[in-house]
Image (tube, rainbow, N blue to C red; front, side, top):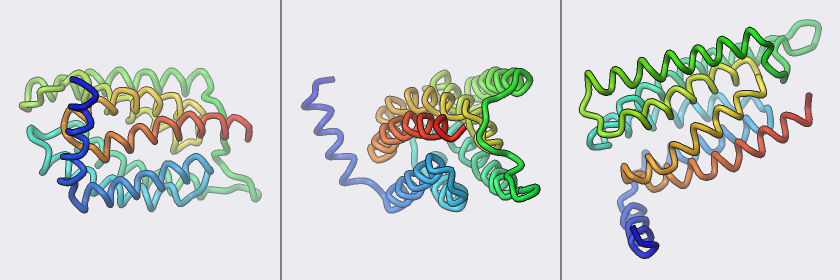
Length: 202
């Protein structure tokens, strides 16, 4: 595909972008920005964004991005959980401050990634008409792990988000979600910045 063709496709997609995609994009960008700042507002803004995204991935994409739709429902559940854990304090200090994973947390994270990647890939291949099962499941499984680590304020969450965003960028462009494509480019930049900013706070 030439640069000219990519630009023309981008213009066509922008003109056909729905309000749900605009709204989801805005809320998710705000959520990642707040995550970078270690601000509790990461969760309420994220909840709105992921619910809109789940609707788009399931009801608008053709064929649907099943794993991404389910992933955004997982985001919703983990956002409720993360919101609760981020609020927890003991002796005026956060129960879950920014920190690196210990050996056990790292191992559980890798196991969660591998199991969710295999399970999501298998479901996409066996139970859906997805034409991008490998990449769709990779985006989802890295994000599943990232969301779990983020709920515990673990530095590794940013590394998992970086991998997820790198894969999500071409996948969303291929599916015609131009705003989501640009959003994931911005997410990649923010994930790198978030990693650096959190690292300075340890």
